[in-house]
Each structure stands twice: as structure tokens, then as C-alpha cells.
Amino acid sequence: MCGLTNPSGCVILEAMDSLNIPALAAKIPDEDSAYRFLEEMRWGDRPVCPHCGSAKRPYFLAPKNGGRKTRTGTISTRRVWKCSEGACRKQFSVLTGTIMHRTKISVRAWVFTMYEMCASKNGVSAREIQRKYNVTAEAAWFMCHRIREAMKREPLAGLLSGTVTADETWVGGKPKNKHARERHSKDHYGREDKTAVLSLVQRETGEVRSQVVPNVRGKTLKAVIEAEVNLPETVLHTDNSLAYTHLGWEAARHESVNHIMGEYVRGDVTTNHAEGYFSQLKRSLDGTHHAVSRTHLHRYLAQFDYLYSTRKMSDTQRMARLMGQTAGRRLTYRPLTERA
Ligand SMILES: [Zn+2]
Image (cartoon, rainbow, N blue to C red; front, top):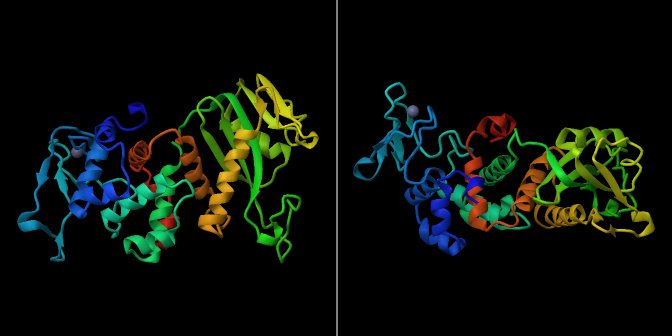
């Protein structure tokens, strides 16, 4: 378990295994406690300088008379540290280098939004966050998308191997076009109004990786699968759609079930894992998030991939792991920053 998060995450995991909203509200009544909570999650009992990586005990710049005066004369409750490494000496807080850095949103709102997004199977809408935590609609939208960004898998995650199920589906589109048989529905202007998504589910670990694909032609799917899967060490399970057959897979074995003939499981060959993921994804997109545009769909996929891949964890473990992933993701989404 500890290997999944930053080592210090374990401290808080043990203490807070039954985290829920009332418990969180009691533990985090104000901004100061929200900082402390994040510090404990990110660093355990010793802050690590995000600028130089030194764990040499930093100086705590204690807020004088209940708060630190900022340049503009307002009182800040930020908990600020100063690196004690001679060559560095830079100031930092627990937010430095994370998705929360340089935002004007309260840290408490961040913590609660992260928790809600980790604990809710169907996800939580920006509107709900706006209402519950008294932030602006813009701030809520921004937080949710930044958290989704942190939920993305590590850029250097290795290839999948073992038993991998590949399956595709169509999401979005107008309600009248949602019947499965109208897969290539067009909108008013003749454009396809559904978006194709390919998901790969690793059977042994339960990890899922999804992505938006421009179409479901064999060539396209094959290229994506080859980029994510170590084929020679993989047994590939698919349905028998033409997109997957006759492609000359380099997989150790390729097995397919014949959905047209009503065959969904044959021995251990099935695409049911991917189907289960898709039904949860669609329930959430339809029920909680309503109209998700094609532009942002990849972020929602990151969120549901994360929730599905960590479904065996407790909410607290899932949140601690997310906290470990929030660092270093800040620069990857300039377009979002511009909008906020
Ligand atoms: Zn430093």
C-alpha cells in the first residue's frame, strides 16, 4: 500500500482510515488546519523543499500575531517554510509546485473537493462544489479540471502486459442519438456527434487506461494498443469486431468472443471488464456531468480511469495517492490556467 503513495502518506492513512465528510469537517475547521492536513499527507512529519529536494529541517516562518503580513498589507494564514540548505534558502509552502499553487481558492475548498472527487463513484459536478463550498462557478470548474489533471497516470508509466482486454465505445451525442444501433449518428451539420473511446483493462491489476480515438478503424486501434501494451508478453482479449481481427497481432495470444453470436464469456475470455467500466463511465457522464464536450472528455476519462484503477483502495488511500500525484503537474495545462 505504501508503495503506491509517498512514504509519508502512510502516517495519515493509518490515523484516518475511516475518513468521511463529517470527520474531515471536524479535522479541518479552517485554513490553517487545511494546510497542516496537506503537509501531513505530502510530507509526514518533515517538510521536503520542493525547490532542491532537501529534507534538511527547514525554518518555519511563524505567522506573527495570528498571521503574516503580505506585501499588499493583508494578513495571510499561509504556512510558509524556508529551506535551510545553504545553496537554496528559498521559501515554500505545501502548495508549491502542486496543482493548488498560485490560486486564490481557499485550501480548505481544495481539500474537500479532492476528497469528494476521490470518494464519489459517479464523480461530483462543479455546480455541486460551487454550492457546497461557497466558491465561484469558475473556481469550482477550475479545481475539478485541475484535480482531473492530477489523476492522470504518470507520464512514464510502463506498458501493460499479462491479460489485457481492449474494447471501444461511443460516448456523448444528443439523447435522441443514443441508441446503440445509431453508432455513427450525425449532428445537425452532418458531423459525428459521438466520440469514440478505447479502453484497455489489465485483468490482474485492474488498471484501466482509456483514451479518445479519432475513429474505430483497425489501424487506429492497433496503433494505440501497440503504444500502451507490451504485446509479446500479453494475452489480448477483444470482441470479434473486424477492427481487431486480421491485424496480425504480435501478442502472445489473441482471443476474441463473438458478441454477434451472443457469446460474451468463453472460458476466461471476455470483454466484460471493459463493458463494466463503460457502463459506469456513461452513468457518470449522463447522471452527474451531463454535457461533456469532446475537448474536455480526456480529463473525465483520466478521472474515471483513476477511480476504477484504485477501486480496491479506501477513499483515504485514494486521496493520499492523489496528493502524491498533485506535485509536478502544474505546468501541463496552460490552456486551463488561461481560462481561469
Ligand atoms: Zn531548498
